[in-house]
Length: 315
Image (tube, rainbow, N blue to C red):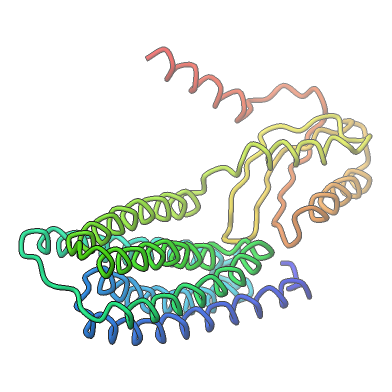
């Protein structure tokens, strides 16, 4: 069991700060937008307020998920708690989808029974404040997500990317309504926002499910691991490579082909060198290596998967 590294401690601290900042901003913006929606009677502003309300719930889930995922491995969870973040992302996708459906319903209803938009100036000021503060938060979240590979932070950031787009479109909507007196443009903006929310929910859910179902990492990462292994002169081959995301940390499992007459101690030393090489590129990763004599005839996972793929293509 690996001890938690200094880098991981730093990452956990940054993730905690990012979640607190997210929750604080979501709460502040929700209160501001609620006042603006009541004062202007704008459906587009109301839709943004509802989105901020779901952000509060999603951010609370993120806070809990990050706290759980930052724990060390335990006897019952020996791969750690990282996938709590993918569960969080899945829950957040449900929040986004729910708000999208609500806004879509209300937008269609407003087309049928239009309502006048009032006090657009105040609405514009509040939405501009929301836009600037959200962009600042996203910049920080992107920094944290890049160094931590946190699915929860990525999902939370995706919320706010949607908020930037919705806030910008609402500003446009309020300008159009106040300048040209086209009240239905407000409802159209809300409907377009709802459709984008539903699409974003689908993307988040898909990525979270891939992690929870142990989908393979990208072909680029798999290729890089193979190249790292084979860069060692003693490595005669690598097969049956399996990879997956443990929740911000990667796991690599494969068979390392070595000369068959090596002493066990030497084979162990070579394996340790390979692990060190991989961890230079992917710190804190979990690595399981099975040593095979080069040229051994055995049933391999790679061969089995290729055969299954050919059968599916025939059918």
